[in-house]
Amino acid sequence: MERSERVLVVDNDRSIRWVLEKAFADEGYEVDTAADGKSALDMISRKRYALVVMDVKMPVMDGITALTRIRELPDPPETIMITAYSSMENTVEAMKLGAFDHVVKPFDLPEVMDLAKRAVERYRSRDVSSGSTGQPITERIIGDSPAMRELYKLLGRVASTSSSVFITGETGSGKDLYARAIHSHSSRRDEPFVTVNCASIPGELLESELFGHEKGAFTGATALRIGKCELADSGTLFLDEIGSMRLDLQAKLLTFLQRSEFERVGSSVTRRVDVRVIAATNADLQDLTARGLFREDLYFRLMVVPIHIPPLRERREDIPALARYFVDRYNTRYGLHFTLTDDIVAALETREWPGNVRELENSIHLMVVLQSDVRALPRSCFARPETPEPPTAIARNETIGKIVDDLVGGDGGELLEAAHRIIEQPLLARLLSHVGDNQSEAAKRLGVSRNTIRKLLAKYGMLT
Image (tube, rainbow, N blue to C red):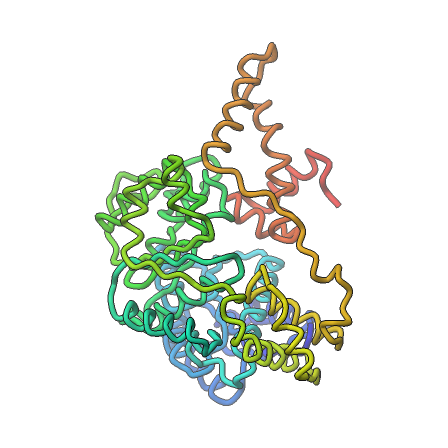
């Protein structure tokens, strides 16, 4: 850990408090405990906590009421809710109120500790340079160039409406920040802001991610799942990298946008929500539409208010302010004192920054950590590995069709088992790489238990 953070464990069950207190202490956290929500609020008013792990059902004051009060604070800690009484209402309410996650007892302790680590990292990554994590999200959008001033005016006009917004911009330009800015200045600011990265979720799982599924809807659906559209009710749903969405799912998304209605996978019950949709992509949707890879009716439905984020090379006058901001952030995070000189700023201004603000931030991060001038860093630090373009929906379908044809046209039997062998191992390998070898997270993404993950890894000789 970079520094010791304080964690508060709140549960009326003494044994649960003891287990979690010991686990957090073993990881180097400073830990306090409380037996009810009222005591927890009293402690939070006196001390600064990065994380609260709190039960839902408690005497004196329940966890949901306490969570509501916590989220009203100017510097609220991240919160993980735990409960033995899982229900759709509890889950939706906790997530709508801003909980980091919702865990059901009996819980997997390593999974809770992994969630806690990520929650603390999110707490640390807030706007530390300002000294106040309660600042609006727009405080992290830096720039006073003419292009940015025009963009701010547009954001302000759009925020006051409920119109769909379509954000375009190159990779690394910060499209998610602008989506959050629109939400934070809208009448929905106190409601959920829910993000779905369409490119990071396999197409066959994306429908469940968006609309949820019923228990038993498909193999691996061991419990009810609340979709992101439902979690975003009354708030904003941000669909990032929407250009990668499959055509069949695009049709269902279009129906949702037109009617504000959806059905969970495995259910015939129609549910209605009030959600503002903001979509974003770095792809050329007009080109995808012309090639039949993106629905034209969905394109026009999303493109009510188009907003383009200018690349960093078109607003170089913002580089000094961005550089100072990131230097302050990482100096504060690591307790360092790197000095940003005029010569370094001048060198930064001459670069093209194909990765935009994200690449600039990564370079500043590296300079602060290594305490080195950007001009003294090895060129390999700035090498950009070539990444192939993601396969289109048609290309993916053609690949799947080829696999199926080969299986059916072969001489062997047990085709389902053969199909499992073809897809399971590369899926496991890719997923584990994506989640940093976190087996609990991989199990959650697959909709199976951690024991099932370990059995599959043993089956394919992938256990380490």
